[in-house]
Image (cartoon, rainbow, N blue to C red; front, top):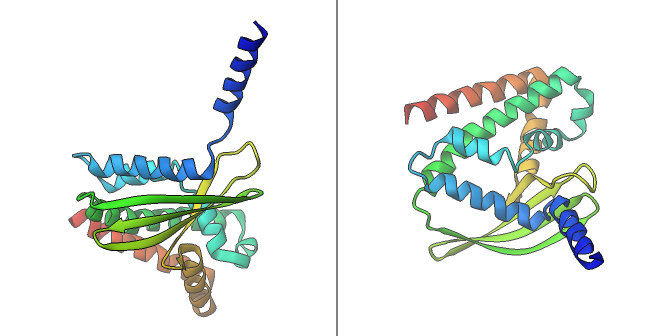
Amino acid sequence: MFVSFAAAALTLTLAAAPARPLAVVKNADGEVQKVLQSADASTSKLAARAEEFVDFGELARRAMGAEWAKLNKKQQEDFGATMKGLLRASYAQKAVNEGRNGSAKVEYGEEKVEGNEAVVNTKLLVKQDTFPVVYKLYRADEKSTWRIYDVITDDVSLVTTYNDQFRQVMAKKGFDGLLKSLKDKQASLEKQNAEK
């Protein structure tokens, strides 16, 4: 009786524990591949699935760096929504176009966890080429779900790249100019995607 109760309690505890970072990345990749291989793959379906694993708001916050704290709540929300739309328009379409052939294979490496930050190393194998891809994840606290906020390919970080671009634009046009540039880019990409 005691043994079965202890086993049941352990099972419930393990089931309730958030997935490890490596499991989150594997699950995200598996879910994205399911969408890409489906007959009705679309950017909206892919983006909706990606949002389960990627925290676009955190990506936006980190990409803004120190400037984020200077924005009011409405500006932060507007910027986060715009970044989400921009990333959805640019990367989801590219993934749908390139992912249909299913020629890429992922090799999963190790995960490194330090507090509420984690890194998962992978390799993307495409034909004869190998590309290192590193996922950076975070969680709000020990009970929270791990979420992806950055992807590094060939030593180029998505967050760092955006941060560099944002600083340059803000130095010339300020926050409002940056936001307008991003919204214009998003609208242009969405128009191109609609025409395909």
